[in-house]
Image 1: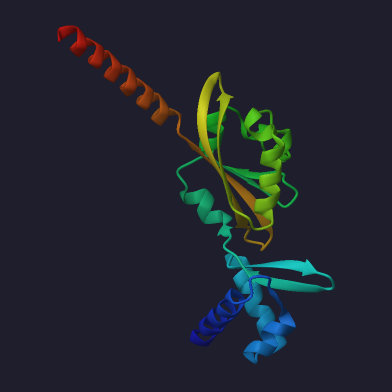
Image 2 (image 1 turned 135 degrees about the horizontal axis):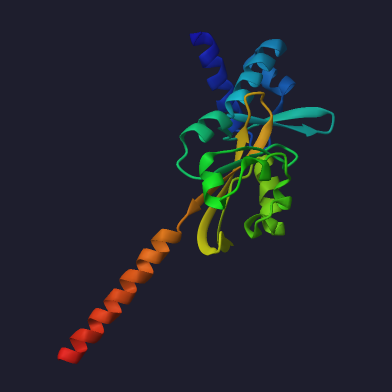
Length: 202
């Protein structure tokens, strides 16, 4: 077990030196490791979300990337989360998402992200960022959008994820900052009223 752990560390350290990636033969030769052994460790690292794999010509290149495993993300996040597969079809949502949008699961499940009936998902930018996340690029955007007849301030994170099967996907994490904005506006209003009263007393 210790040997396995050390071998995976060596693979990750090697890939850290080659951001454009290496194929399995290059990895095996560099670490003096049997090709089948390298393949086993690479599959393990892919499932963990530590490395990614892309087809480059006839070869598959591996490179270091951070993908969040889907299961803990869905289980432990405190924000609404929508997960898509590599086809940008929604395959998972958490209860916070259904609460934010006030809708049943059926409205999301199996739909392509750009076909969801909410303005936040309909922009070409969102579709492109989802595509980028599937291919390993993390993005954050801030936007204002109406949800359930209320204007919301959202910070939307699009992050690369990996499923238990090793397949890639995108997680859309929605951080709702509406209440923070509303509290700030109320404080600003109170401060202005206080300043006006103090001026009248002067």
